[in-house]
Image (tube, rainbow, N blue to C red; front, side, top):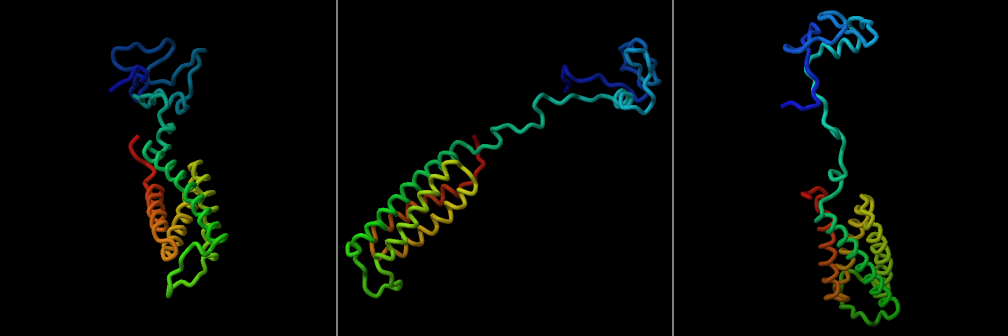
Length: 196
């Protein structure tokens, strides 16, 4: 295939292709001549360009990376936004759950003989601090930075473990939060490149 911008080739001796006349002031086989009539010495850059033959020009924009190649697909971007909003909501819920346990620990019924003996107030502080951190990770994830994604994955994993251990205190709510955390993990671990 040829392009209108392609340069005509020359044979190694410097002669123009068949059917074309040599430029004025040039001789076949000798060094190329400039517009001033002086000949380039053999082996110069201009002489090498003239003797290397057919060289197509690169298309405009060739080799440049476009913005579309670096951004994630629409579905992945939507999942990231959804995960960040759910992270902020889960952070608020965890904060309120922890606050309720700190203010009124008798609200939570503790089952006897539970393997992990922590008071409701202790769990309240854990959920309160984790809720603030999860909310901050969700807000940072809106910037769609890799570090925010890694921090969010770590914090959501900690939230899942904490809610699993909190099941005897508040079972239905803990299972709902675990399900939301698992969805957030799935959304954050989805491959970043996809079809646009």
